[in-house]
Length: 194
Length: 421
Image (cartoon, rainbow over all chains, first blue to last red):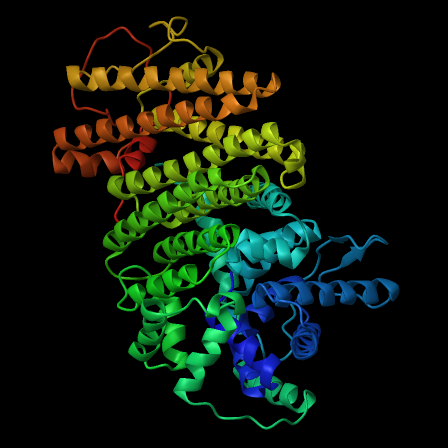
């Protein structure tokens, strides 16, 4: 849903090129975007690269575009998804270089996770180290799902987006998002049961 | 209500993921690096007056600005002044939840935005977003460590109920418009209602186990469900009046929406059945018979098995009545499915509402029976009951010749809602 603050900050960026306003947008959303990308990539370097690209693209869209922004969050996740898919495609073309999360992308852009391996703990940067085992478990389960299912569940259950925002982020209809959500949740619960 | 242990594990795992954060040094470096990348531009400092004007311009469509006079403009300025006009304060108001000091400011700013919106469909859409905010607030109260949870939830559900009433009024008022406009409004109302039901189901995973809270949430859920059903009826009417409204809501979308509702009610009925079984009122073998039979007549006393321990006449009456409700719920649900197959979509809603009401009645009666059982037992017996494995529901013996429930009694204890929270 359009947040008052976000709407105001977008207005400032568009009308004045206000970098302070952009910094505030960054501060408001950085953790959320980082968490989402982390759930999908887990390699620290890849996560950091993608996240910075996401905000750069946000600036480009806001400072140069004129379309109404319904939801900055929705837009950010839309950009993040695209960037993550680019990473998958890039890695798929170079099979000798493996991602920690081992994903396969088909030509239609649908990515399936064949999750093997562990969370990356290279260097500092992730503060969840003391709960790594539980987190690794959840991510393992989530990554067994199809791309769209992963994203809908993450956006709904972790980031708390509304269905309309999720629909915007993944470019599907509201009804479709709800179906994916219910099916995904049922699958996830079954995985946990196993 | 029985807590599904998988829910607890899933909730815990999600909490772990929510706690993931980037390193703060990295965040700072990134911010600086981004600022370098986006180039140099002078920042023009702005006054509070400028801020009010900018917010106004950002949020109010140009067409509406000339209409803004007197009270509305005063409210907008008043709110901004009241909260000091700083971004931090506006942000705090936006994050407020029921029971917080700034929550009325949040509500007031929503009212202002609604007042400034002239287009009917846009107003319904905006109201739908605010309704979803109420659900998010309830989830937040449920999932975080705030004080006075029961009071906050009570306030939150009351406001949500009021907001849902507003949405239903908006739906009714749309009757003045064209079929296409009606369909647009109805589509939003249907989606809002379903989102609310889903959101409350999620919130319930984390809510304290408390009969009052449960009935408050159930009531507002019923209101959201009825809003959705009303909206579906309006969509069907609009399509009958003007077939071109399928551009707004296609036949497939409509059918999909109805099927979702049927499944939703079916889950509700299953859950009510499970509660009867877990509370030891219904034996496990009976539940299968019940879901197969759809009239009370066929579900004779040889099928409906009540635990022998329920001996007080009031309890027996309540238990029997809950079984009757369950049979009725199954019958209405079966009828709804038939109506869908027969493409009599306009009639499905009423049957589903009947089924929902019956299922809710079952849940209420289970609560009553459990509370009666707790009241009758001594407190030490209640403590012993939660630890022991052979607990009668009501402490008296009976030689009634009925089948003993095969459900283990430990589930009875947890259904009693005695777990501390």
